Amino acid sequence: MKKVHDNLFDGIIALPSFPVVFVTVKSNIMVAAAFHFYSFKPPSVMVGIKPEKYTYELITSSKEFIINIPTKEQLDKIHICGTISGRNEDKYQKASFTPLKGNKIDSYFIEECPVNLECQVVHHIDYEGSHKWFIGEIKEVHIDENYIRDDALMFWLGQFRTVGGIIEGASNDELLKKG
Ligand SMILES: Cc1cc2nc3c(=O)[nH]c(=O)nc-3n(C[C@H](O)[C@H](O)[C@H](O)COP(=O)(O)O)c2cc1C
Image (cartoon, rainbow, N blue to C red; front, top):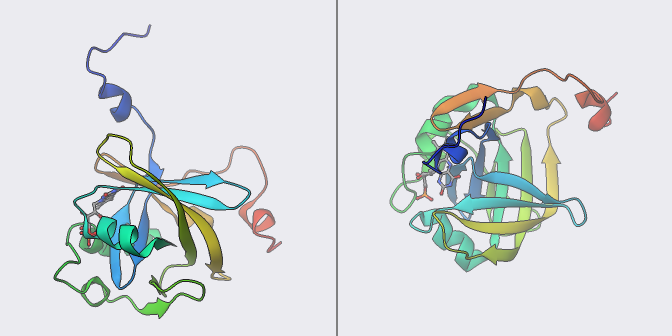
C-alpha cells in the first residue's frame, strides 16, 4: 500500500542514484551529481551548479565546461574536489590530477579520468531553485580505449554506489563499438 507523504522533499529522497562527475572549467575542478544527458542531436548534457560555487562563476563567464567521468577508484579525489573550493586552492595539485588543455575549448580536463566531454554552454536555466542548470553541447569527446562503463560511480544523499549488471540490452563493448 502506498502512503501520501506530507513532506514533499521525501520525493527527492526517494530518487535513485545519479552518476557523479568531475566538472572542470578553466583550471578548476568540482564534483557534481546533478548531471544528466540532455539531447541526442545535437549531443548535449546538462549540469546543475549551486550559484555560490566558484565553478558557477567560471561557467557563467567562460560559457564552457568539461565533464570528466571518474572511476570508482577515484573516490578519494571526489572527496577532495567535492569539498574544497577552488577560489584559493589548486585542486589539480591537491588531488594529484594532471590538467590537459581542451582541444575545442579553453578549459583543462583531467587526464586520469577515462572520459572527457568538452562542452560549450548553449543555454542557462535560471529558474528559482537551489541549482542552476547549464546545458552544454558536446564539442569534443575523449574516451580511453580501456574504458569500462561499469566502473562509473553513482551517488545520492551521501551514498556512493557502483552501477549494477545489465539485465537487458547490448553489452558495453557493442555500444562503444569495441566488439
Ligand atoms: C558526491 C558529491 C556531489 C556533489 N554534487 C554537486 C552538484 O551536483 N552541484 C553542486 O553545485 N555541488 C555539488 N557538490 C559540491 C561541490 O562539488 C563542492 O562544493 C565543491 O567544493 C565546489 O567547488 P568550487 O567552489 O571550486 O566550484 C557535490 C559534492 C560531492 C562530494
